[in-house]
Image 1: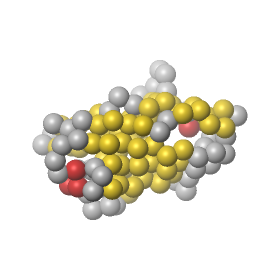
Image 2: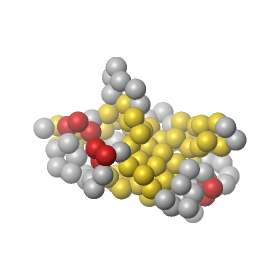
Image 3: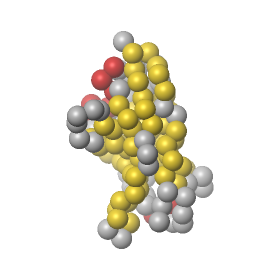
Image 4: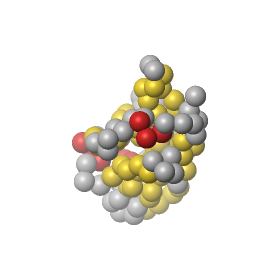
Length: 116
């Protein structure tokens, strides 16, 4: 079992930055792929950024060059640095761990609101 707690969301103006954190409980965090998703009302969750156990990263086209995902395997935490935020980045951001033996684990999300 893995428990995830996201933090760092809030209200910012367009052009500003936020850093989201996702703290994971449980063992073997370093071998788990971690992913940030986001969701707006009425829409499916979309992948924002992912990072493998080896540190390889992948980004949605819409955030490339603005967002950076990273992980600290000592602190069992994955981060999402979001720069040059746009109103269209407004969403609830979720952290996912896995798959782990076929299971995915999700946090409860943190709300990011970007005003124009």
